Image 1: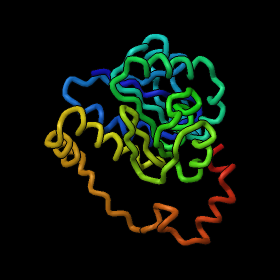
Image 2: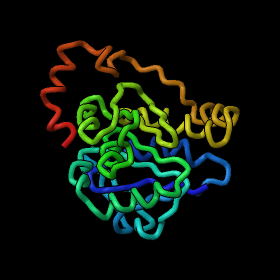
Image 3: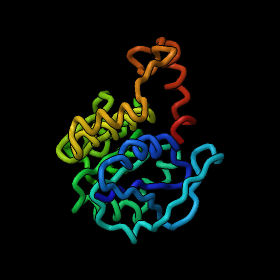
Image 4: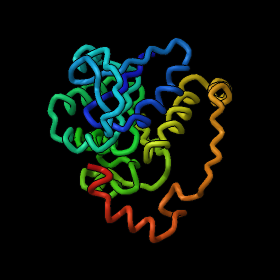
Length: 211
């Protein structure tokens, strides 16, 4: 089973690496990083690069598609090369997935019209503009489409997908092997839990956080 994880300039690293660490443990998995052109692709801070081993055109029919988000997503919303590839890959994929604002790219490609989907909480309103039905859930499955909320939720999405592909017992083994047992020191990881003043502060800065 081939998984293609899309990279683009200024992606968020954990959006791509979180699902990778789960999905690469599917038995018989082949996980490839793809971009418009092969080579290193810098993350949103510019301090980290992942290497795309193949160009989009070299991987046209993956079984699983993973689209990360990040500030660089905005510049990709009208990238015909990427959007066309997403439509082509989705036409034969078993699962089409996204993390954070990666769902906006799926929506821009016309793949989430009429479907329930999630994204980073600051970007949920934009999903509706493309005909999707936004929800604040952490991981949303609608048919073969699985969308995850902000950044860290990509790990949850990846683990859930391992269970769907390889079974619950194998997914539990992956969870144990990676010691994925979150115990955050704060309970402010959702706008429903965080202090209201902090939520409003980030909302006011959303342009700078997401772009």
